[in-house]
Length: 438
Image (tube, rainbow, N blue to C red; front, top):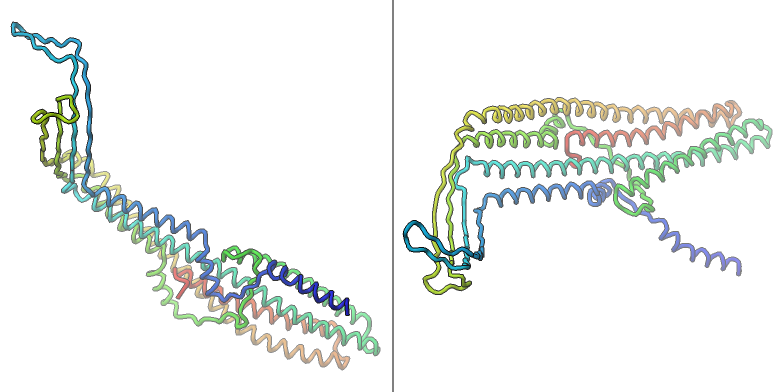
């Protein structure tokens, strides 16, 4: 009784260590994607780029505000030679030293500058939208990375489950073979064959478990959760989605694909750049006001009527006439850049269409493969049942029995892998449209 009590207490003491040393967490696919997006370091970097673009936009808006300057200056002069004589006139005597205070304040506003500031603001706003689309694209990449790893874990867990069933079945077959050997129905070689099959499947189980640990660790890192968390998947499995017609995905890509939308924005930016370059040939009009404080009395606070405060108002109209013939090549260069953007979009559109068609056909093949494998499992189960009966009646050999069982469990593994491949193929198709979350 003391020994049993000691073992029980030891088990209770070890339980918290096991609990805190290895965490368990069950996640469905959507929860995993949400975690990956929430904790992605790449997305945090994308958010900082968006903030940088927004700050740049605010800076451009600041450039459109009136410019204002103020200055205050103090001058002290020493005049050793203070006598000034011009011709036969009486000499003019200046003070040996002088102090002066001069202050200026000015406000300037560009009324019309050819629209260059307005074009700069619109261009910067469009580039901010480009940064947001870049973040959307990164979000799609993170989601797909999580989906890819999630399905890899699903595949290895399903393989592990089938292998465990296979080992359980082999153990039963081995006991039966040993019983038959004791009864003299089969030879020792038959028992050894079952033992060899058990060893081979056990090695497969070890390799699968090693793969599971590697994939599980990768998924933990992607999701931003502790690396010692063991992720389990819901027992319901991953539902297979029905595919819409090919044209649906093509239309979706033309409106949602981030790269195409970015090129549309880049084309608008290029158009604004053309207009901005053309604006260099237009005149500019600005207005301003200046205030001066002149105090030559030498006192910081001068006596009455010993300082002046003139105020001036003015307008400036300027026109760089030479730009009429020096700006033509700059305009042509900007137009070429805009045309290049349009060509790049046409090229990318063709590539996107080919990518979607390829992924669509891959998904169709993956779905059809599942149907074929389901039929093959039915055939393998029937074959396994027949060989099991024949082996019990000593009509079939151990090799035939083992081959039938191996084919059955291989077909079951292939089916689970095909289901995962089909699910991943569906999300690959969605990714090529630029919108995984439909």
